[in-house]
Length: 239
Image (cartoon, rainbow, N blue to C red; front, top):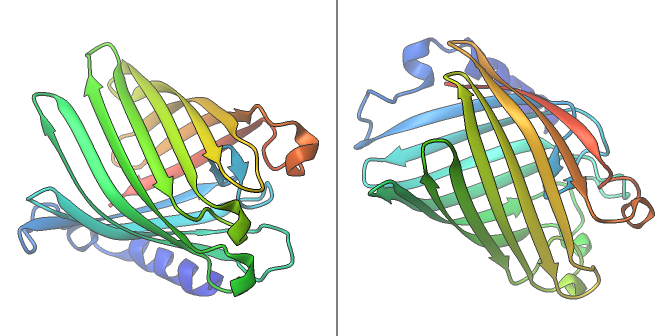
């Protein structure tokens, strides 16, 4: 899986610009965009998904002119729990748009972990909604996600994740953002809060550099150091 993913990544980087992104092609009334990234740690809702190790990530998304979209996203993972999952493969579809400056996005997500045993219960689906507004000095986004059967064994039951993100532009190519999320779980795990603070620098025509601090209110021993405070550096490029 890692070899296949790296081969696809190399191929995307080697494509000519006109083939990488068909934003202006009007393909089926929409466009296709690809994104590749390298991170020193893959953190999702406060938890490291790679045991503190680096990961290569990428996505491919079709955006219809109507606002409908669909795509896939992949990343290396390492849960260090005896299962053979080395990759996460997400499938998603939804609808987004804006009305008088108010943006909205509703979607369906399926999280798959090839190689993991069925008993581990890793695979799950989630419904998510997001609304945002750009006030000029700052943009604010509110999110809500729900799944009837969270990641892990069946006893984890449902989960609801509520979040807020504030982004402040500093320069045309530099912004600072902060987010807070609350994970509400039924079953084996307790509710917790995670937060992040970071800055994104756009290197025009090259890549984006994001440096971000992550932390949670969970005691270190409770999550085997996977949700401790950490700084994540991400280099990404959209084609």
